Every structure is written in structure tokens, then in C-alpha cells.
Amino acid sequence: MHKVAVLTSGGDASGMNAAIRAVVRSAVFRGIEAFGVHQGFEGLINEEIEGMNAGSVADIIHRGGTILQTSRSEGFKSIEGMQKAAERLWSRGIENLVVIGGNGSLRGGAEFSQLGINVIGIPATIDNDVPFTEAIGFDTAVNTVLEAINRVRDTASSHGRIFVIEVMGHDCGEIALAAGVAGGAESVLIPEIDTDFNQVLEKINQGIARGKLHSIIIVAEGVYPAHQLKNRIEAATGHDTRICILGHMQRGGTPTAVDRILASRMGKYAVDSIFKSERNIMVAGEGSRIFSVPLQTVVAGELTPKLELYEIARMLSI
Image (cartoon, rainbow, N blue to C red; front, top):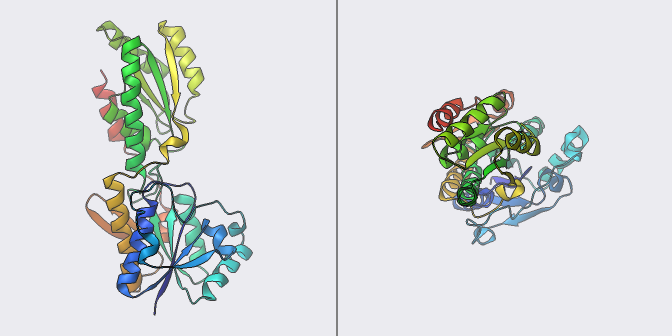
């Protein structure tokens, strides 16, 4: 009989629990014995493994975070650590491992698969920076940012202020772009495009010229220091400018329907692939389509920035 273990690794993302639930219940449905690994790859090394059944994942689809918890493992970066982790699985007769996480987790899974473990990856990261797919957690994070924009806009409008809102995305501007377009921001600063401070000022001044006294500037973390941006805007425009750094509140919270459905479909597909003897793939989702990509292809691939959203943001903020 097949056996499968599931773990979550790296940064948490809302929808991870829905994915765990889908993996475990799909395994039960298929007659596959399911195990949960606590604390990610580190827990695998330390043999924090327990059997799971349909009841183990009851009432978790709506919860943020991960019931299996997560961590970043230094030990797993060594061949000795990976070998020890593999032995933990082999000792229980487990040959399949579902890894739910972002780029680093999938890269670790791809290396681990070279020891003979069949690794099935499920992309889960709020940054949405995994190639070939949409990631679990992104939609929830964007909606969290959007709610913050809506609330900040009320205050900005009431007081005639400019707000700089910093969102997550040091190397990827997906959250900033999506939230900026959906929230009607005047400017969006992302790592994929060089910052043009004059263009930021131009957007603000265009609004002021037509009687608009407030503006929303979205900046991905690490692109431009929020405090410096605030000071430069205030000095150039004379308008009261404030900062709102959303930080880790973007990670948590109840997952949206989009993330719950995506996680459920990906979790089922992961178990189906094991049942059909597919090996070492990542489950990918794009629109209504769920498909597989070889893990090694994912690791070697590069994300193509969705810069058409940047053009939309630039054009609609006139």
C-alpha cells in the first residue's frame, strides 16, 4: 500500500491548511496511509511524524497558518541532514512526500528527491513568485492589503494626506501590483521596475491640480525606504505624508474562497499523481487548469513578471 507524508515549509501562507486537508482526505479516499510532519524539514530530521486520518484535518479549511507548523531548517541543507530525513521516512515505509511551500522549500524538495524519495510540491507563498503557477496564499494576502488600502483611503481623504503603504515582496512585486490596481493607487513601486521619483511626484501633482488632496503610494518592501520616500514627497509637495507598513499581517488570516479552492484542487491532484505513479513534480495552477511540472524544471525556471498590470496601474492613475 502507498504511504504519503505531508509537510509545510518556509513562510506560512493562508490556504496551507486547506492543502493539508485535501492531501490527507484524498489519501484516505484512495486507501493511501497518510502522515503529517511537524516543523517542516527540521521536523522530518527530528522524526516529528504522526499518522493522520480524516478526523485529523476536520475544521481546518478556514484557518490561516498551518496546523503542522513550519520552520527553516539549516540541518536539511547538508547531505547528512537530508540522508537522515530520508531514513526517517524509509523506516516507516514512506516513499512519497508532499512539500507545501515556496521556492526555497521546492528547491529543497527537488534536492531531496535525488535520494529516492518521490517528492510532490504544492506552491504556497504569498509572494506568488513560483514559476509556472499561481501560489496558494497570494489571493488572501492581496485582499488583506486591499482592505488596508480601503481603510487608509478613508483617513487620507478626510485629512487631505498622502499615504505610503509598504507591502511584502522584496524580490517580487506581485502583491504590490495586484493590490495597487485593485485599490486604485496613484503609484506602485516594484523591484522589477526602476523607481522614478519624478513620476511619483507627477502623479501626485496631477491629482492636486484637479482638486484631489490625497494619494496612495504602494511600495514593495526593500524597493525604496518608506521613510525616505515619505520625506521626499513631503519636501517636494508640502503635503502631510504618512507611512503604513503592513508587515506580517499579510501572511495570516482566514483564506479566501479562491485560496481554499486552489489548495483543495492542488492537494487532490498531488495524491492523484502518487496514485498514478508520477514522480517528482510540482502541482501547478493557472486559471481553471491544474497540471504538473517536473520539480527540476521549476527549480531551474524563472518567474516572468506580469508587467501588463504595471501598465494598467500607470494608465488608470492619471
